[in-house]
Image (cartoon, rainbow over all chains, first blue to last red; front, side):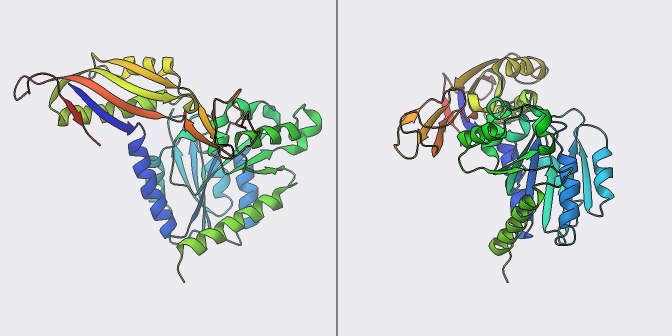
Length: 223
Length: 129
C-alpha cells in the first residue's frame, strides 16, 4: 500500500510557531529571532540594545544555548526578563521550546522580545519560532564569503547586521562587496553595518527596532 | 546539521499515518528535499539508519528526491537556475525574484504492508491531506 502524505516535514513545528505568533501578536509584542554563527556578537549586541531601549519599552529575552547559562546571566544583570533554553546538543531552537519559554515570561508587560538562537548559520534558518522577523548577524572577522555560503539564512532574514566594523582596518573584509552579495540574495534586505562594542552605527538599528515596535502596536493593539 | 531533527519528524509523522492506515510495517519513505534547505541527503540517510531502529520503519528504505533551485524573475517573468547562489535574473539582471523550487522539505509518500486482519486485497492508494 502506498500512502500519499504530501505534507511539509516540519508541519508540527509550523503549527506550534503559528500558535506562538498568534499569542505574541495578540499581546502586541514585537518578536525578533536573532541568528548568527557562534561568536558573531549576538549577546553583546543584545546588551547594548537593551541598554538603549530598556527605558523606552519593556523587553524580554529568550536565550538559546546548547549548554551553559553564561549568556542569560550576562543579560539578567541588565534588568530585563530572561528565560534560558538549553538544547543539550540541539543545534537550533524550535517552536516547541519557545512555547515553553513563553510560559515563563511576563507577556502582559512586554513590548519587545528577542529570541537569541543557538549560534549556527544553517539550521535556525529552517525553524519558524513564531517571530515577526529574523535578523541575521554577520561579523567582520568571519570573512566576506559567508552570504554566498549560507544563503538561506539571509534569504529568510528581514535585516542583516554587519557587526564588529571597528575591526575593518585589521581584516580584508570587503564591506561594499558583502552588501552587494546580500542584495543579490535578497534585494530588499535592510543592512546595518555597526559595532556593538564601540556603539558606531547602533542608533540606526535602534531606530529600526522602535519603528518595528510601533508598527506591531498599530497592527495588533486596538485602541 | 539539522538532519537528525528532520528525520525524527519524518518518523513521527509516518508512524502516526501508518497506524491510522492499519499498516504493520513501512517499507519505503519518499522525501523531497530542496537544495536551498541545505539538508544533506547523505546525512539524512545516516540519521534514518540510526533512528529507524526499533520503530515501525525499521525495515524501510529512504528515497530522496533532490530538488534543484529554480527562480522566477518578477520583471521579465522568465524562470532560471541561479549560478553560485546569486539570485539575480540572468536575462534582465533584475533582483526581484521568487523561489519556485528548491525550498522543499516534504514527505511525498510512504509504502507499507497491511496487517493481515481487515486488510483490503491488492494495493490501494489513499490520499490523506
